[in-house]
Image (tube, rainbow, N blue to C red; front, side):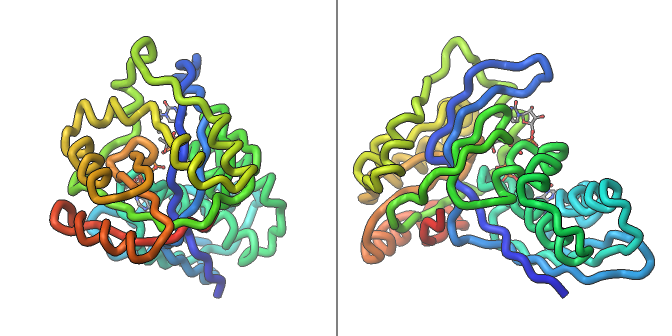
Length: 282
Ligand SMILES: C[C@](O)(CO)[C@H](O)COP(=O)(O)OP(=O)(O)OC[C@H]1O[C@@H](n2ccc(N)nc2=O)[C@H](O)[C@@H]1O
Ligand SMILES: Nc1ncnc2c1ncn2[C@@H]1O[C@H](COP(=O)(O)OP(=O)(O)OP(=O)(O)O)[C@@H](O)[C@H]1O
């Protein structure tokens, strides 16, 4: 049996540049991982089937599950006869902007690479992963990276200075295509990534806090005012910086001391069901 953890990601920055001919948006974003993890196990099957065990009302256990798609792609690409039972224990909130499904898929690529003794490089797994989702290439490595293209062109970056992250998800799910679909490129905030890169290179926490930005934030907040409200509550609760992750609706705040993190946690517990205090892994 093989075990893998699948950490959530947050966006430190997200800039959208233009809409491409294939319908995707060219992006430039810096992502990093936090220690909020789904857990997966992989067990070989002789009958060649891919079976997903997951007990969660909003997560499909059939071909729609991203872990299933990853397993199917690995099986076809490397012509594997064996099957696999994948057991998935979810902790990452669903449809949250934290790449939960993408991280499960990435863990599946890594897990099956071992279970089926394929032993391919992370680099090759990362390019293969782009066939089923833009965030999965990053999730293959986790850590911290500048992601370009539609998200799959990676440059690895130093890990962020240590910090506590308070993550809060309002009780709504947001669909990524809906947010990209509602984005008006003529009227969007340009988010430079240079300051954030400098902050990471220099280990400069204050600059990191100043450099956070997400050009999808206004779009999601326009459609879901509760996200703007949550960000305001987060701001007023004493965080050093706050931002919406990905296409939302999750908002996170950064602080340096555990005591501050607990204070922020208490302030947010009243306004959403899903609040977590975690650390940057990066
Ligand atoms: C918002 C982010 O999570 C930030 O990391 C990603 O950009 C989205 O990545 P993802 O969930 O892996 O997205 P995919 O599954 O590849 O694409 C879902 C849909 O989002 C839109 N999409 C996604 C990525 C991108 N660079 N441009 C897009 O316009 C497209 O409509 C696409 O059909
Ligand atoms: N392993 C999985 N875990 C969670 N959701 C999954 C999974 N596989 C497929 N899904 C489907 O994908 C949808 C989006 O879920 P997910 O949690 O991955 O979104 P997300 O956090 O917004 O991802 P991203 O940040 O990459 O856009 C869910 O509504 C669910 O139906």
